[in-house]
Length: 372
Ligand code: BGC
Image (cartoon, rainbow, N blue to C red; front, top):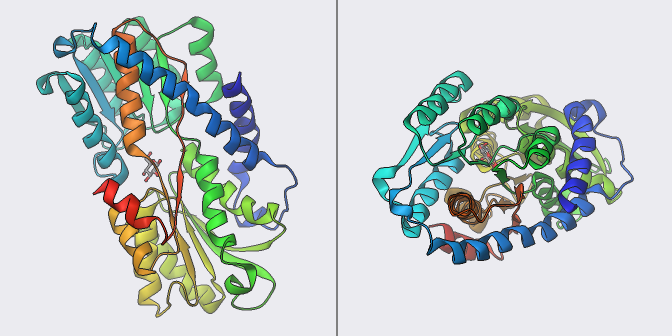
């Protein structure tokens, strides 16, 4: 199965990803994993389309207004997950769920808190659960108790590992994951830099791309794969890279601002590119870049992921080099459709994918019109 192939690639690359950082940043990799994973991710769409079609047939059969949906979000203050949950709520209502039957709770970035919330949902007898886990590594425990309670489960945004997903399939459980392949977003970040040309990017003329990496939560596969594949896109194209600093900013603007301010203080004009695993951190990086008197597009380049409105406005203004659209519409709709498919008995594949979109000045307005 295609998903298995993708998962195998991801499992292999995760081993490397945990070691990614300045330590092995000059290693030039020779395989085409990124391209393969991207191709595979594109073909994964079929699963989502099939699911949507099945949903369209099934919706009319379900009495959704009476169904109770429990939604666990890892942390309400996360900008991206705020867009996601708002769209999820609206879309569930548009499908016919009663607003009063949709309960969305904040895990406050604490797995123990979230586990208690899941227990409460089970006790209340919700009909379906949609869970954005605080720690993906807790998925097996979560799955076990939700399956034991006979409640269908849709994981979102933070993908459980290969062995966990294999259990769902082997046991025929009503459990699935909805999300995009993070290696694709990393590859797109690398391509945004490559599209500028080495001569433009290599300001200090040492023949290398001297960069800073700001990572999201290190437990999160999105952070691991974006960190790895953004740089891999460059090295696969034969570009030499030099990692000046690789630090964890936990998806947060303020943490990224101080990381980048320190790195700029330490490495000065040698910093040519700042890769951030998400836009919130790219916005923090931009504050630090501007405070240091540097100018994106002239003497430094900056990329993020998500396509937050503020980031898109910066791309349009030239104060960010680019970003990657993390399609919260598609993901939240697929998650809700998957929930409906379980409720109507139509069932789902155990992985429902979507594609990222590379964003430059050329298409930023189009994406902004969509997200605003
Ligand atoms: C997004 C981040 C977000 C994270 C939460 C990622 O896919 O790009 O902005 O913080 O999900 O898990």
